[in-house]
Length: 195
Image (cartoon, rainbow, N blue to C red; front, side):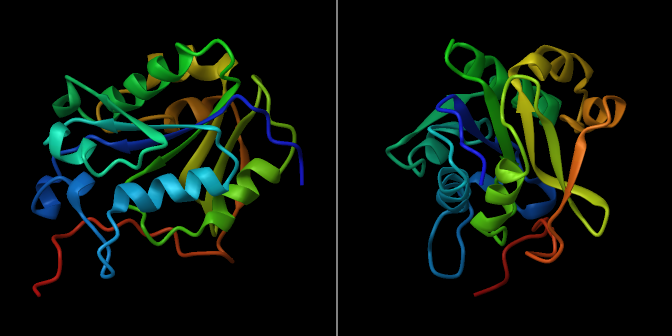
């Protein structure tokens, strides 16, 4: 496994209002009661991230209360503009740390993603300011994505509406890492099951 740089920042995008999900996904929890925010932070931590950021938006104060102690909640004021807004907020906050080298980014609504997925993305090669990688399941793009610092400005500029890093990753031929043997890549987009 490659050495993980101390400047690897993990970013959880948890700002959306969850219109199709019946409320903010940042407030959702698994069947065992573990908040999805905590699950996402655990995955990033286990993948080697030394700093964790959770971008909040809808119901920001309530979501921030679920953020684990070793992570920082970052409020995205214009979260209603789409995923791109929270993506830019996360990268801008990561960039405030001069030691930050790369960012491993995931969505809060992927609670089924095992830590092994993030670990494979990080371990696939050198992680530095030039790294550009994304997970794919049977060739289909998914999360997490790994963006070296040199790409943050360009990816932020291309992000628009509900498209985050995708357009930039495609334009710059990001390295694709197959993770379909580890999980199905499915997000949870619907409302919680009735109890």
